[in-house]
Image (cartoon, rainbow, N blue to C red; front, side, top):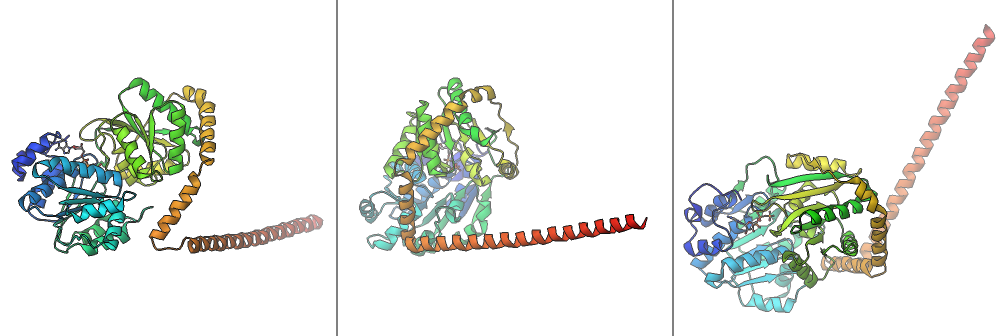
Length: 482
Ligand SMILES: Nc1ncnc2c1ncn2[C@@H]1O[C@H](COP(=O)(O)OP(=O)(O)OP(=O)(O)O)[C@@H](O)[C@H]1O
C-alpha cells in the first residue's frame, strides 16, 4: 500500500507501545490518510477523512483514540457508529487487537442480538462502544443503567451512509444519539465517499473540522482492474456460472464476492450456485444475525470461497483473500459501485471487478464511469461456452425460484417490513390502506390521462380526415373546371 513519506508513526506522535502493536497487524508505515488525520486528531481537532477503499481509514481513527484513552482511561470514552453489524464487529476486532496492551474493554451493540446481555455490558462502562444506530437508540430510550454523557470521541464510520436516507434510514436514531452525547467532544467522520453529504456532516462535526481528501482524480484504486460484460438479461446467470467456473479453474485460491440487488435474488443465486457445486454462502438482511456472522466467518476463513451478498456487505468489510468482485446487477448509484468493488484490491493488493451490464443498464455504466473518472474495459468471455450451459442454468435457476416460493421467504419479508414500520412508530394496517389508496388514485389519474390522450388523438384524426376530404373536394372541383 502507498505509504506516506515522512518519519513513520513515531513522527506522527504515536507512542511506542501502539507502534509495536500495529506491527503485528502489518501496519508499519502510515498511509496518507493516517499521516494527515492522526496528528489532527491527537491535537484535539474534529476530523473528516475521505480516502479510497482499503486505504487504512480504520487505523486512522483507532490509533489516536487508543493513545488518548491510554492517557486518561475511563468508560464510556468513545462511541463508534457503523451502518452494519458486520462492520461494527470488524471495527471492534481492530480495537481489541490494538488496545490489548492497555486492557481495553469494548462492547458491541448491534441489532438482533440479546438486548439484556448488551444492557448489562453497557452498565459495566466499557471504554469503547461500537454500535449500529438503531440498537443503540433503543438502549438509550429504554434504559437508565448507562449514559454517554462523558464520551470524548464520536466516530461515524461510513459517515455518508449513516446520513443518507437509504432503505435503512438512520437519521431518527442519530437524533436520539446526538441528543444523548455531550456537545464538547471530538467528532471523527470517515468514508471513501464523503463529498455528497459534506454539508450535513459538517453540522455534526461542530468545531470546524480538519478535512482531508485523497488528491487523485480517479476514485477507485490503481490496483483494481475494472471490467464489464455487456450481455442479454436472460443470459445473466449463465454468464455468472461461466465466470465463476473459469475463475476457479484458473485461480484455485481466489475468493469471490458476488453482489446482487435484493435479498431474494441473493438467496436464489446462492441456491443455484450450490446446485452447481460451487462452495458458496449468502449474506443478506433477511437472515438471522447469527447466520449472518457465521456465513461471513466461513467466507473469511476461506472454508467457502464465494460469498453472494446484497449491499449489506458493500461497505467497509476487509477480507484480504477477496481477489474478485462480480456485480450481478449494475449498481444504480456510482457510490455503491465504488464501495462494492472496493472489497477487493485492498491495502495495495491487486484485484479484479466484473460488472454484468444488460441492454437496460448502459446509462448506469456511463454514470459510474463519469463518477469514478475512469473507463471500464470489456471482459472477453467465451460466448459459445455460455450458450452451451444456458438452458441448464436457466432451468436450475427456475427450479430454485420455485423451491424458494414454496418456503415462507416472501411471508417473512412482509413480517420484517411490518416489524420495521412498528419500530418507526407507524401502523402497518394504516400504511397498507394508505398505500392501496395511493395506488388507486394513481391508477385513476393514469386512466384519466389515457382518456384525454384518446380524445385528443380522435380530434386530431377527425381534423386530418376533414382536411383530406376538403383537399379531395377541391381537387375534384378543379378537375371538373378543366
Ligand atoms: N499503514 C498500513 N500499512 C499496511 N496495511 C495497513 C495500514 N493501515 C491499514 N492497513 C490494512 O489495510 C487494510 C484496509 O484497511 P481499512 O479496512 O481500514 O480500509 P478502509 O480505508 O477503511 O476501507 P473502506 O473504505 O473499504 O472501509 C486492513 O487490512 C488494514 O489492516
